[in-house]
Image 1: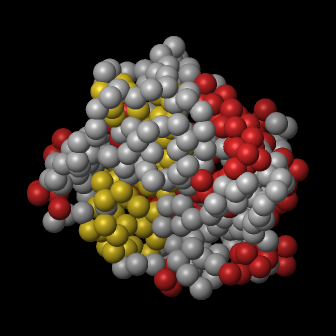
Image 2: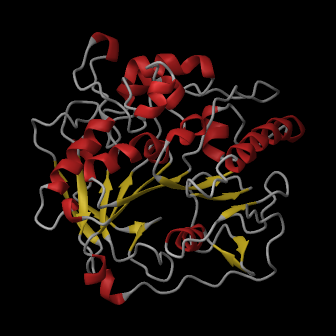
Length: 387
């Protein structure tokens, strides 16, 4: 096992390289809405959709990356109904175009060396169910709403399979996503492999998607949240509301009870596809928006104790991924961030130089290296953390 520890190599990160001119003209993708008859609906019943940017080199014609957008989740009537007047609940508010310029769906070959020229598909998030829901028919039990995140992915994949020279010709496919989209990668990645058949190598690359049950901070200055409760006892009700699709091997191991398989920390050992996690070990959004830590981190002495325990749990979760045979990899930083991963920061040392998450992923995916990178210096210890 290779684990890179604590202090960074002493060197300032170089400024981001300029984007590839040849790719710039092709990185704005139009919105395609799914048919009205689809099961892949938003909360309000409007059909969801996707943005497709075709590959920009002949070498990448059969390579595809699908990105699941993030945006929280809802588990209460008030929270869910509040999402209906925006793109997180209705496709009526989707942007007509999407620029491929973030994370692993960036057209900049210098900062995204692994996938810059691939076919890129961005899936907007409007189901509030962590991309797992299979409740396509509204009912009183679902507040009159649909929770159909898995069906959205299913419908988009079906359309892409039917395109000439489409997903059916794929040799390599990466399913990625950030935040809620990152959580949605793990339960769906083996399913995606099954849809494509044995000719395609399918990989999961969650960003801010490795989580576990957590009791909230209840010390001085604690807040509250209208996002989903992450305590273990709350997950059965989330499962009842969303009717989630989860990995079938995990489901079988838990006697067809879905909720233990909804978070990656408990389901990853059942996943056959290779996985690479990009994760903050002191996740800002989960700590403040789910776990009641005050945003100003005051009083620090009490808050720090809670974050230290949370961080140790994340360290343990990352160490549990160090499985060479299963092709796991990770990039875990001690930063008070959620999805703020860029070519400039945060960085971790690898082979004598400081690398970003995208460079670490490239070494793991393209060069087939064992990449288990994380800080061990304590709370917010990485000196390259974004401010």
